[in-house]
Image (tube, rainbow over all chains, first blue to last red; front, side, top):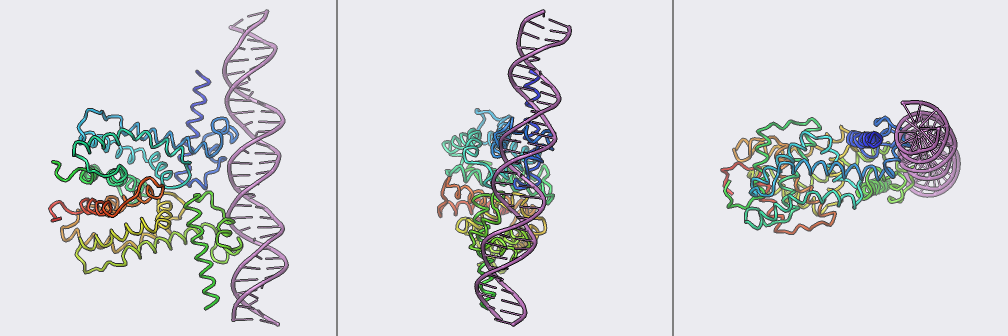
Length: 197
Length: 197
DNA sequence: ATGATAAAAATGAACGTTCATTCTTTTTTT
DNA sequence: AAAAAAAGAATGAACGTTCATTTTTATCAT
C-alpha cells in the first residue's frame, strides 16, 4: 500500500504540474524538465509513469475531463424532470468552470487546439452521455428543441467557457445574479417556444 | 512598386503558411523551417519580414483579427435599428466563421491559449468597437439587456466558435435553416424580454 | 525481529536531434 | 557598380528521451 500510495502522489503531482504550466505558458513552452521540477521529480521519473510527453498530456486531458463530468452529474438523477435535470447539471457545470478554473482552462485549451490526439478526445466525450440522454428525452417530451446536440451545447453550455476565460484574464467578474441570468438565457435558448417558464 | 509588391506577396505567403501549420499541427509543432518551406522561402528570409517567431505569430493574429472584424462590419451601417444592425453583423460573423474557417480556427486557437502576447490581444480587441457601441445604444433604447458586453458576447457570438470547430472536425454540418435558428437563439438571449420579435 | 539480498523506483548526467536565429555568400534590383 | 533581398549553411541552445548508477522498498532465511 505504501508503495502504491507514493506512486499515485507522484503521478498526481505530475498531472497538476502539467495543467499549471500548460495553462500559464502554453504547451509549446512547457518542457518536460519544467514539469519535472514543479513536481519535485527527476525528468527521467516522468517516463516511469507515462510513455512520453504526448501520453502525459493525453492522460492529463482524460483525467480532467472525467473530473469535469463527474462534477457536472454529481447531483443529477435520471428521475428528475427534463427542466429540473438541466438546471441541476447546468449549475454544476457553471460551478466547475468558475471555481475549478484551472481544470476548466486546461480543457478549453485542449478543445481548441490540436495538442490532444483524436482517440483521447473521443474518450473524453464519452462521459458527457447523461446530458445527451437528457436532451433526447426532452426532445421526445416536446420540451427541448429538435436540433442537434452540437447546437444545444453551443447555446447552453459553451458560453460558460468564454466567460470562464474572460474571468481568468481578469476582464470581469461573474456574480450570483449574473449566473442566474445566464442560466435563464441558456434554458431559453434550448427549450421549445411554448414551454412554460 | 515591383519590389514592394514582391515583398507583400512573400509576407502574405508567410502569414498564410503560419495559419495553415498552426491550425493543423499546433503552435508547438510549427517550426520556422516548415513555415519557410510552405511559403517557398529560406528560413533566413522570414527574419527580413518579422523580428522573430513571436512577432510573426502576433502579427498574424492581428491581421486575421482585422480581417474578421472588417468582414463582420462590411454591410453594417450605424443608422440601422439596433435589431437590424445586430442581425446584419451576426450573419456576417456566422458567414466568416463557417466559410473562412481557416482564419476563424486560427483565432479560436489564439483566443484560448497563451501563444499571443497581451499587447497584441488588446490590439485585436479594438476593432470590435462598433458592436460594443451598438449594444450600448441598444441598452439605452431598452432593447438590449442591461448586462456586460462579455455576457452578450458569450451568449450571442461565442456559440458560433464552438459550431465552427465542431464543423471543422467533421462532427456535423450547419445548414441555412439551422443558421437561421441559431440567429434567433442569439437574438433571444440578448434582447429584453418585452421586445417584440 | 534482523540483516542479507533481490527487485523496484528514482535519479542526474548524457545523447542525439531539432529548433530559432545568425553569418557569409550569392542573386536580384536599382 | 552599389544596395537590397534572399539564400543555404552554420551555430549554440534547448529539447525529449535514455543510460548507468544510486537509493529505496520488499522478501525471507535465520
